[in-house]
Length: 75
Image 1: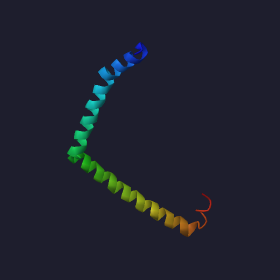
Image 2: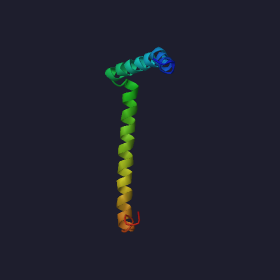
Image 3: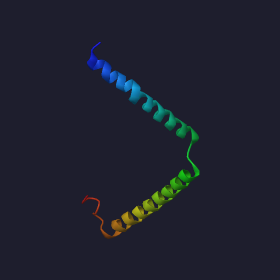
Image 4: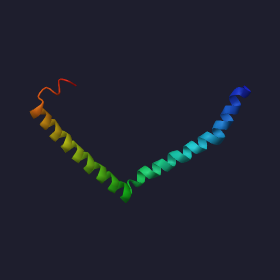
């Protein structure tokens, strides 16, 4: 084999592959554990905020439909 092929292969097998495996299995453990209490709380907050923004958007669209009937055509 050529030295041009062997050197990158040694670098990959010695540095990149082990790091890749460690990070992969760490992320797998995190997925299996599920969300922490803090992450679950944050997700609930974001979900509530998304519902509020959706309601505001619906209200805004209703107001625009009443006051500016052709606003959707101008987009």
